[in-house]
Length: 194
Image (cartoon, rainbow, N blue to C red; front, top):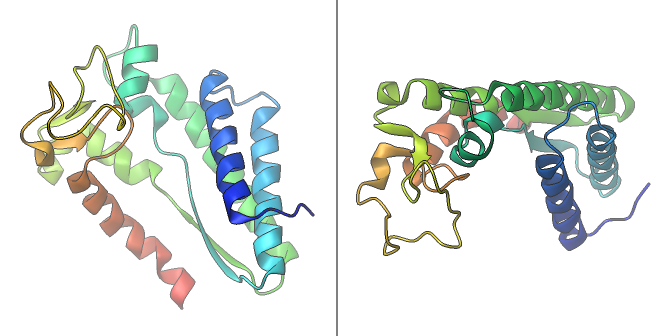
């Protein structure tokens, strides 16, 4: 079992996420099992410290992020299906790993917060949720995408009506979209408090 403190955990998780995202999202690489193994180890560590109720988020529909559409969506209208398929495959492996851990560790309850479906639904039917734009961020053009470091309400090109956008920038949901997502996820988390 690895000994990981919270700062190391955050750093390693960010590193693995970066590697996952930059390796072409390849589901069949050795990277996915390594990430799952790391997650198993982190849960083992938390369990060893006394945690019995743990929540983990799934991957979002990566192919629907404005950055992914710009970088990888050459011949596709809408979301990049290959990236979404890879995210779904990864999420299945996370669910399987969570089920195995619950069998192995007495009293452990893991909830996988499925961010994939509610965000996908927002992107596919933005008007159903009161949004106007889901293909690009409030701070972005749809051709050149930026992230939160370059985006703020006073940045050149930032929209004046962020509540109408599903995405704030090229990868982050807007505050209004996060509220919709939180409402969907809170129901999934009830199992952690019962």
